[in-house]
View (cartoon, rainbow, N blue to C red):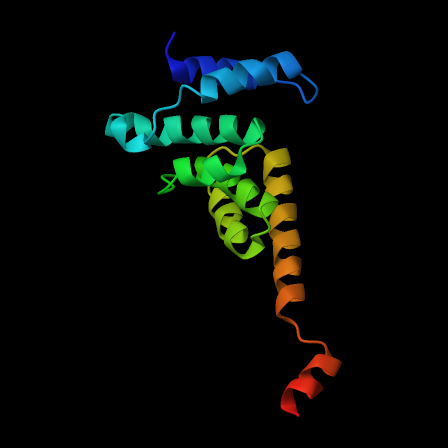
Length: 141
């Protein structure tokens, strides 16, 4: 069985509290190629989405971002967005979540979760860019 099918199988069976599954997924993620560009062009988008999800679910957000560059499709964007949000970068994450919403056949519960993440990112971005009145007076002085 190829690496991508193995990752797909483990992801489909992974439960939130499944340490054994997470260790299996980590072992598979450690076998990812160093670059998605080393794969045949026709396999890259699917492989990138599976690799990004595997890396994210094994708590490796920085590697999700570096391994998934450039992002080839909306299925990968969901995991890159989550990694960026975990790293405190909501302005970058929101673009990826919005791109992920273009995934064909997106399940309604996944779409709702992405919509909620877009809203929370936009709220965080707004909170970062709004200057409270007291601060704006002191800057004019």
